[in-house]
Structures are given as C-alpha cells and as structure tokens.
Image (tube, rainbow, N blue to C red; front, top):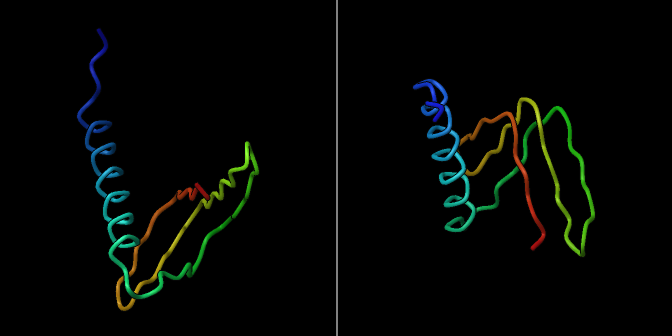
Length: 77
C-alpha cells in the first residue's frame, strides 16, 4: 500500500475546501459572480453536455470578495 505524502494530502484538502467555498458562493449568491481574469478558456460539447474549462491565473469577483485559482470547470448539466 502506498502512503500519500502530507503535502499531497494537504493540497487535496485545500483544493476541496476551495471548490466547496466556490460552489456555496454560487448556490447562495444573490449577486452575480464575475470572471475577472483567466489565461485560457475552452469549451467542449459531449453527450448534450457542455464542459467549460478555465485555466491559469483565474480570478472571480462577487461583491467585494475575490476568489483566486489555477483551474475551474463548469458543466451545463
């Protein structure tokens, strides 16, 4: 059995917390969330579903809050 390093486990926890924070902001948001910056944006259509991916230096803004990241994906489902 392979053991995960503490650094990898911490990175995974941080990523999951950021995704949870992002999703809760979207679900509970009354203000619109605005994409301020991303290095690249791509969109793929598969099985009647559109997947939109952002990568590199992503900044979202909602009200006076900023959310920073390096990868984000949105599904049209």
